Amino acid sequence: MSQPTTPANRIITLNLEPNDPRRLANLCGQRDEHLKLVEARLGITLRNRGNIFQLAGPIHRVKAAANLLEHLYRETEASDLDPDTVHLFLQESGLEALEEDEESEGGDEVLLRTPRTLIKPRGLNQQTYVQSIRAHDINFGIGPAGTGKTYLAVAAAVEALNQQEVRRILLVRPAVEAGEKLGFLPGDLAQKIDPYLRPLYDALYEMIGFEQVAKLIERQVIEIAPLAYMRGRTLNNAFIILDESQNTTREQMKMFLTRIGFGSTAVITGDVTQV
Image (cartoon, rainbow, N blue to C red):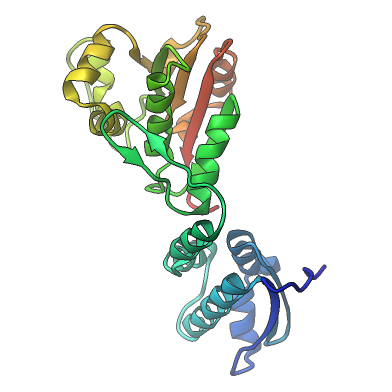
Protein backbone atom coordinates (compact mmCIF):
# COMPACT_ATOMS: atom_id res chain seq x y z
CA MET A 1 0.00 0.00 0.00
CA SER A 2 1.38 3.40 -0.96
CA GLN A 3 2.21 5.93 1.72
CA PRO A 4 0.13 9.15 1.74
CA THR A 5 1.68 12.13 -0.03
CA THR A 6 2.45 15.03 2.33
CA PRO A 7 4.87 17.97 2.09
CA ALA A 8 7.52 15.77 3.77
CA ASN A 9 6.37 12.49 2.18
CA ARG A 10 6.70 12.25 -1.61
CA ILE A 11 6.43 9.72 -4.42
CA ILE A 12 9.05 9.73 -7.16
CA THR A 13 9.46 7.52 -10.24
CA LEU A 14 12.83 6.12 -11.30
CA ASN A 15 13.51 4.68 -14.76
CA LEU A 16 16.59 2.44 -14.89
CA GLU A 17 18.25 2.08 -18.29
CA PRO A 18 19.01 -0.09 -20.15
CA ASN A 19 15.98 -2.32 -19.61
CA ASP A 20 17.86 -5.58 -19.08
CA PRO A 21 15.80 -8.35 -17.36
CA ARG A 22 18.92 -10.19 -16.17
CA ARG A 23 20.38 -7.09 -14.50
CA LEU A 24 17.00 -6.14 -13.02
CA ALA A 25 16.63 -9.61 -11.49
CA ASN A 26 20.14 -9.25 -10.06
CA LEU A 27 19.23 -5.84 -8.61
CA CYS A 28 16.01 -7.06 -6.97
CA GLY A 29 17.42 -10.34 -5.62
CA GLN A 30 15.59 -13.56 -4.91
CA ARG A 31 11.99 -12.77 -3.97
CA ASP A 32 12.94 -9.07 -4.00
CA GLU A 33 15.15 -9.52 -0.91
CA HIS A 34 17.48 -6.68 -1.96
CA LEU A 35 14.57 -4.26 -2.42
CA LYS A 36 13.11 -5.30 0.94
CA LEU A 37 16.47 -4.61 2.60
CA VAL A 38 16.55 -1.11 1.09
CA GLU A 39 12.93 -0.51 2.19
CA ALA A 40 13.59 -1.61 5.77
CA ARG A 41 16.85 0.33 6.14
CA LEU A 42 15.63 3.59 4.57
CA GLY A 43 12.05 3.47 5.87
CA ILE A 44 10.42 3.90 2.47
CA THR A 45 7.98 2.01 0.23
CA LEU A 46 9.47 0.64 -3.00
CA ARG A 47 7.52 -0.86 -5.94
CA ASN A 48 8.61 -1.74 -9.44
CA ARG A 49 7.29 -2.96 -12.77
CA GLY A 50 10.12 -3.91 -15.06
CA ASN A 51 12.71 -1.14 -15.05
CA ILE A 52 10.30 1.50 -13.67
CA PHE A 53 10.55 1.94 -9.88
CA GLN A 54 8.20 3.94 -7.67
CA LEU A 55 9.57 5.16 -4.32
CA ALA A 56 7.41 6.70 -1.58
CA GLY A 57 8.48 8.24 1.71
CA PRO A 58 10.21 11.31 3.17
CA ILE A 59 11.69 13.29 0.31
CA HIS A 60 15.33 13.10 1.52
CA ARG A 61 15.06 9.34 1.94
CA VAL A 62 13.48 8.60 -1.44
CA LYS A 63 16.19 10.69 -3.11
CA ALA A 64 18.85 8.73 -1.25
CA ALA A 65 17.13 5.46 -2.25
CA ALA A 66 16.98 6.55 -5.92
CA ASN A 67 20.71 7.33 -5.92
CA LEU A 68 21.42 4.00 -4.23
CA LEU A 69 19.36 2.01 -6.78
CA GLU A 70 21.11 3.75 -9.67
CA HIS A 71 24.49 2.92 -8.12
CA LEU A 72 23.53 -0.72 -7.51
CA TYR A 73 22.17 -1.04 -11.04
CA ARG A 74 25.53 0.08 -12.44
CA GLU A 75 27.19 -2.62 -10.33
CA THR A 76 24.96 -5.33 -11.85
CA GLU A 77 26.69 -4.83 -15.21
CA ALA A 78 29.90 -6.43 -13.91
CA SER A 79 28.99 -8.44 -10.81
CA ASP A 80 26.24 -10.38 -9.04
CA LEU A 81 24.74 -8.65 -6.01
CA ASP A 82 24.08 -10.36 -2.69
CA PRO A 83 22.52 -9.05 0.57
CA ASP A 84 25.96 -8.35 2.08
CA THR A 85 26.89 -6.16 -0.90
CA VAL A 86 23.59 -4.27 -0.69
CA HIS A 87 24.11 -3.74 3.03
CA LEU A 88 27.63 -2.42 2.37
CA PHE A 89 26.30 0.09 -0.17
CA LEU A 90 23.63 1.14 2.34
CA GLN A 91 26.34 1.79 4.93
CA GLU A 92 28.28 3.91 2.43
CA SER A 93 25.27 5.82 1.11
CA GLY A 94 25.54 8.68 3.61
CA LEU A 95 22.47 7.45 5.50
CA GLU A 96 23.96 8.29 8.91
CA ALA A 97 24.45 11.93 7.91
CA LEU A 98 20.89 12.00 6.56
CA GLU A 99 19.51 10.62 9.83
CA GLU A 100 21.54 13.10 11.88
CA ASP A 101 20.12 15.96 9.79
CA GLU A 102 16.58 14.69 10.40
CA GLU A 103 17.22 14.40 14.12
CA SER A 104 18.61 17.95 14.28
CA GLU A 105 15.39 19.25 12.69
CA GLY A 106 13.19 17.81 15.41
CA GLY A 107 13.27 15.67 18.53
CA ASP A 108 15.42 15.75 21.64
CA GLU A 109 19.09 14.78 21.52
CA VAL A 110 20.02 11.47 23.11
CA LEU A 111 23.22 11.79 25.15
CA LEU A 112 25.02 9.38 27.48
CA ARG A 113 26.80 11.10 30.37
CA THR A 114 29.79 9.28 31.83
CA PRO A 115 32.35 10.65 34.33
CA ARG A 116 35.01 11.38 31.71
CA THR A 117 33.12 11.94 28.46
CA LEU A 118 29.78 12.83 26.92
CA ILE A 119 28.72 10.28 24.30
CA LYS A 120 26.30 11.08 21.49
CA PRO A 121 24.87 8.07 19.60
CA ARG A 122 25.22 8.48 15.83
CA GLY A 123 22.28 7.91 13.52
CA LEU A 124 18.72 6.83 14.13
CA ASN A 125 19.53 3.18 14.90
CA GLN A 126 22.00 4.04 17.67
CA GLN A 127 19.62 6.65 19.12
CA THR A 128 16.78 4.11 19.17
CA TYR A 129 19.09 1.49 20.71
CA VAL A 130 20.02 3.77 23.63
CA GLN A 131 16.40 4.83 24.18
CA SER A 132 15.36 1.17 24.25
CA ILE A 133 18.05 0.35 26.85
CA ARG A 134 16.76 3.17 29.05
CA ALA A 135 13.13 2.09 28.70
CA HIS A 136 13.26 -1.71 28.91
CA ASP A 137 14.68 -4.32 31.27
CA ILE A 138 15.91 -6.71 28.56
CA ASN A 139 17.38 -5.49 25.26
CA PHE A 140 18.93 -7.23 22.26
CA GLY A 141 21.49 -5.38 20.13
CA ILE A 142 22.01 -7.25 16.86
CA GLY A 143 23.98 -6.07 13.85
CA PRO A 144 27.27 -6.14 11.95
CA ALA A 145 30.53 -5.91 13.88
CA GLY A 146 31.76 -2.39 14.59
CA THR A 147 28.36 -0.69 14.77
CA GLY A 148 28.68 0.39 18.43
CA LYS A 149 26.49 -2.22 20.12
CA THR A 150 28.91 -3.07 22.93
CA TYR A 151 30.34 0.44 23.33
CA LEU A 152 26.90 2.04 23.77
CA ALA A 153 25.82 -0.73 26.15
CA VAL A 154 28.87 -0.05 28.35
CA ALA A 155 28.16 3.70 28.21
CA ALA A 156 24.55 3.12 29.27
CA ALA A 157 25.77 0.89 32.13
CA VAL A 158 28.27 3.50 33.35
CA GLU A 159 25.60 6.22 33.19
CA ALA A 160 23.13 4.06 35.16
CA LEU A 161 25.79 3.30 37.80
CA ASN A 162 26.81 6.96 38.03
CA GLN A 163 23.18 8.00 38.53
CA GLN A 164 22.74 5.23 41.17
CA GLU A 165 20.04 3.50 39.14
CA VAL A 166 21.95 0.23 39.63
CA ARG A 167 24.44 -0.91 42.26
CA ARG A 168 26.85 -2.85 40.06
CA ILE A 169 27.82 -3.73 36.50
CA LEU A 170 28.32 -7.31 35.33
CA LEU A 171 30.29 -8.02 32.17
CA VAL A 172 29.46 -11.46 30.79
CA ARG A 173 30.93 -13.15 27.74
CA PRO A 174 31.21 -16.71 26.44
CA ALA A 175 34.87 -17.73 26.34
CA VAL A 176 35.11 -18.67 22.66
CA GLU A 177 38.18 -18.16 20.48
CA ALA A 178 37.82 -16.32 17.16
CA GLY A 179 38.72 -19.23 14.89
CA GLU A 180 42.02 -20.17 16.55
CA LYS A 181 43.02 -22.17 19.61
CA LEU A 182 44.72 -20.11 22.31
CA GLY A 183 45.71 -23.12 24.38
CA PHE A 184 46.27 -22.93 28.15
CA LEU A 185 45.95 -19.44 29.61
CA PRO A 186 47.84 -18.85 32.90
CA GLY A 187 46.50 -16.98 35.90
CA ASP A 188 43.30 -16.92 37.94
CA LEU A 189 39.80 -16.95 36.50
CA ALA A 190 39.68 -13.19 35.83
CA GLN A 191 43.08 -13.26 34.12
CA LYS A 192 42.08 -16.22 31.93
CA ILE A 193 39.05 -14.42 30.50
CA ASP A 194 40.65 -10.95 30.33
CA PRO A 195 41.55 -11.34 26.62
CA TYR A 196 37.91 -12.05 25.79
CA LEU A 197 36.69 -8.96 27.69
CA ARG A 198 39.24 -6.49 26.34
CA PRO A 199 36.67 -4.50 24.26
CA LEU A 200 34.59 -3.98 27.42
CA TYR A 201 37.64 -2.93 29.44
CA ASP A 202 38.74 -0.46 26.75
CA ALA A 203 35.32 1.22 26.81
CA LEU A 204 35.32 1.38 30.62
CA TYR A 205 38.83 2.91 30.72
CA GLU A 206 37.74 5.60 28.28
CA MET A 207 34.59 6.46 30.23
CA ILE A 208 35.78 6.10 33.85
CA GLY A 209 39.59 5.98 33.86
CA PHE A 210 42.13 3.23 34.62
CA GLU A 211 42.43 3.80 38.38
CA GLN A 212 38.71 4.11 38.99
CA VAL A 213 37.96 0.97 36.97
CA ALA A 214 40.54 -0.97 39.01
CA LYS A 215 38.97 0.27 42.29
CA LEU A 216 35.46 -0.65 41.16
CA ILE A 217 36.58 -4.13 40.11
CA GLU A 218 38.35 -4.60 43.47
CA ARG A 219 35.14 -3.60 45.30
CA GLN A 220 33.07 -5.92 43.05
CA VAL A 221 31.03 -2.97 41.78
CA ILE A 222 32.21 -4.02 38.33
CA GLU A 223 32.28 -7.80 38.09
CA ILE A 224 33.70 -10.06 35.40
CA ALA A 225 31.54 -13.16 35.01
CA PRO A 226 32.16 -15.89 32.40
CA LEU A 227 28.83 -17.12 31.07
CA ALA A 228 29.56 -20.67 32.24
CA TYR A 229 29.75 -19.41 35.87
CA MET A 230 26.38 -17.62 35.86
CA ARG A 231 24.35 -20.69 36.75
CA GLY A 232 22.58 -20.56 40.12
CA ARG A 233 22.88 -16.79 40.59
CA THR A 234 20.11 -14.19 40.90
CA LEU A 235 21.26 -10.70 39.94
CA ASN A 236 19.30 -7.82 41.49
CA ASN A 237 19.88 -4.07 40.93
CA ALA A 238 22.55 -4.76 38.33
CA PHE A 239 23.32 -3.71 34.79
CA ILE A 240 24.28 -6.90 32.94
CA ILE A 241 25.96 -6.95 29.54
CA LEU A 242 26.19 -10.25 27.67
CA ASP A 243 28.61 -9.61 24.81
CA GLU A 244 29.16 -11.81 21.72
CA SER A 245 25.89 -13.66 22.37
CA GLN A 246 25.96 -15.21 18.89
CA ASN A 247 28.38 -17.75 20.39
CA THR A 248 25.91 -18.95 23.05
CA THR A 249 23.74 -22.05 22.88
CA ARG A 250 19.98 -22.07 23.39
CA GLU A 251 20.45 -23.57 26.87
CA GLN A 252 23.05 -20.94 27.84
CA MET A 253 20.78 -18.10 26.71
CA LYS A 254 17.84 -19.51 28.68
CA MET A 255 20.07 -19.84 31.75
CA PHE A 256 21.30 -16.25 31.37
CA LEU A 257 17.81 -14.78 30.99
CA THR A 258 16.60 -16.56 34.14
CA ARG A 259 19.45 -14.96 36.16
CA ILE A 260 18.02 -11.44 35.74
CA GLY A 261 16.46 -10.31 39.01
CA PHE A 262 14.56 -7.35 40.43
CA GLY A 263 15.70 -3.88 39.38
CA SER A 264 18.18 -5.17 36.82
CA THR A 265 18.75 -4.21 33.19
CA ALA A 266 20.25 -6.64 30.67
CA VAL A 267 21.74 -5.85 27.27
CA ILE A 268 22.52 -8.80 25.00
CA THR A 269 24.70 -8.01 21.97
CA GLY A 270 25.49 -10.22 19.02
CA ASP A 271 27.13 -9.90 15.61
CA VAL A 272 25.40 -10.92 12.39
CA THR A 273 26.52 -10.64 8.78
CA GLN A 274 23.17 -9.24 7.58
CA VAL A 275 20.38 -7.16 9.09
